[in-house]
Amino acid sequence: MAYTFNTDAPECPYCQRKQTHDGGFFYDEDLTEHECDHCGKAFDVEVYHSTSWTCTARPAH
Ligand SMILES: [Zn+2]
Image (cartoon, rainbow, N blue to C red; front, side):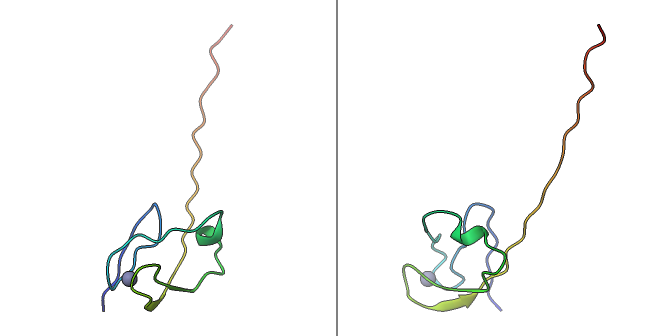
Protein backbone atom coordinates (compact mmCIF):
# COMPACT_ATOMS: atom_id res chain seq x y z
CA MET A 1 0.00 0.00 0.00
CA ALA A 2 1.44 3.36 -1.00
CA TYR A 3 1.72 6.02 1.62
CA THR A 4 3.60 9.24 2.25
CA PHE A 5 4.89 10.89 5.40
CA ASN A 6 5.55 14.59 5.66
CA THR A 7 5.86 17.04 8.53
CA ASP A 8 4.99 20.16 6.49
CA ALA A 9 1.77 19.18 4.74
CA PRO A 10 -0.11 16.10 3.55
CA GLU A 11 1.47 14.60 0.46
CA CYS A 12 -0.65 12.75 -2.10
CA PRO A 13 0.18 9.02 -2.12
CA TYR A 14 -0.68 8.86 -5.84
CA CYS A 15 1.19 11.80 -7.38
CA GLN A 16 3.42 12.76 -4.41
CA ARG A 17 2.37 16.41 -4.62
CA LYS A 18 2.23 18.38 -1.40
CA GLN A 19 -1.26 19.62 -0.63
CA THR A 20 -1.99 23.26 0.07
CA HIS A 21 -4.79 24.76 2.12
CA ASP A 22 -5.32 28.00 3.98
CA GLY A 23 -5.46 28.09 7.74
CA GLY A 24 -5.30 25.13 10.10
CA PHE A 25 -7.36 22.73 8.01
CA PHE A 26 -4.68 20.04 7.83
CA TYR A 27 -4.00 20.26 11.57
CA ASP A 28 -7.51 19.23 12.55
CA GLU A 29 -7.32 15.73 14.03
CA ASP A 30 -10.82 15.08 12.70
CA LEU A 31 -9.39 15.13 9.20
CA THR A 32 -9.51 11.56 7.88
CA GLU A 33 -9.61 11.94 4.12
CA HIS A 34 -8.66 14.43 1.45
CA GLU A 35 -8.95 14.81 -2.29
CA CYS A 36 -5.66 15.63 -4.00
CA ASP A 37 -5.28 19.24 -5.19
CA HIS A 38 -3.46 18.00 -8.27
CA CYS A 39 -4.67 14.58 -9.46
CA GLY A 40 -8.12 14.67 -7.81
CA LYS A 41 -7.80 11.22 -6.21
CA ALA A 42 -9.14 10.74 -2.70
CA PHE A 43 -6.92 9.24 -0.01
CA ASP A 44 -7.04 8.59 3.72
CA VAL A 45 -5.24 10.92 6.12
CA GLU A 46 -4.07 10.47 9.69
CA VAL A 47 -3.03 13.58 11.59
CA TYR A 48 -0.44 13.26 14.35
CA HIS A 49 0.46 16.00 16.75
CA SER A 50 3.60 15.88 18.79
CA THR A 51 4.46 18.25 21.58
CA SER A 52 7.69 18.71 23.48
CA TRP A 53 8.88 20.99 26.22
CA THR A 54 12.31 22.44 26.80
CA CYS A 55 12.96 23.74 30.31
CA THR A 56 16.00 25.82 31.16
CA ALA A 57 17.24 26.70 34.63
CA ARG A 58 17.55 30.40 35.37
CA PRO A 59 21.03 31.74 36.11
CA ALA A 60 21.77 32.16 39.80
CA HIS A 61 21.84 35.76 41.02
ZN1 LIG B 1 -2.38 13.49 -6.29
